[in-house]
Image (cartoon, rainbow, N blue to C red; front, side, top):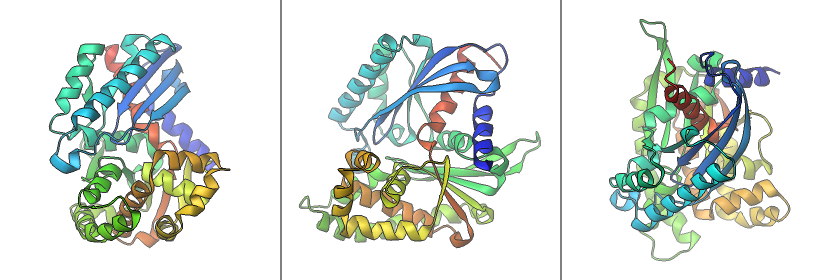
Length: 358
């Protein structure tokens, strides 16, 4: 009951918009992320009261950030792929869902936005859609994640961490400023599932998982050092009682380890489970392949991530948890709605701006 009340509070918080935006109207968002492109469609019945329905949500799994870890740029073929997939789905939103152009928002996640040549993709999309595609900084992305992934009454006691394809971002709120508004402190790690996997892969001579695991051992010290630095720069994290986790790495761990998808909006788990799963995906991966034939949740994870991606992703998850000061005293949760929380927040905020509402 407590969790359901908290989730309702989140929805009201995200969509608390002035009364002159009250209607039944379809909005859509396209997020161009490092590991895939996500589409959300929501039917707003009464935004002021937080009434909306998720009409549809789908992802096209294309890893377009591989080149960033090599030379800091998106590869030309990845730019073309991202453009084609975005345009295809933009057209689908217009023609199949009958959504007005002004109600469709396209954003680039921070993991893709860090590419030196991301402007090439933005310009191509502008020419086709006439939309000024926004790049969401890791700080803003984390702040929107916090809004969508943590029950408001627990803001001051919680840390949010999201492991994306291009980077890992998060943050926390600590104190009220002079205007009585909570101040947000962002944290960022410039390694995510795709970028960390490719960082390891660039030294590989074969395609074997055994070699990948050997190379991972050499890559872990840098990951741990960067994570240590992140927490040292943010000592107030020590005071947080709750850790809310989102992102594909956490979804993959939770689904494969539990053998089913999360049923609660906030599902608790322990660091020991992450460590156990870390060994399983390296030494007993065949178990998951066998389970996938009879379990749709497991099958979806394995279709999204290769074994190498799963190993790299969980190495980040395990490291960021292990390095949290006094982590055994914390409560850790997988946030089921994390995959669309920040995007829904952005759609709602963009809807306000589009109608010049303050």
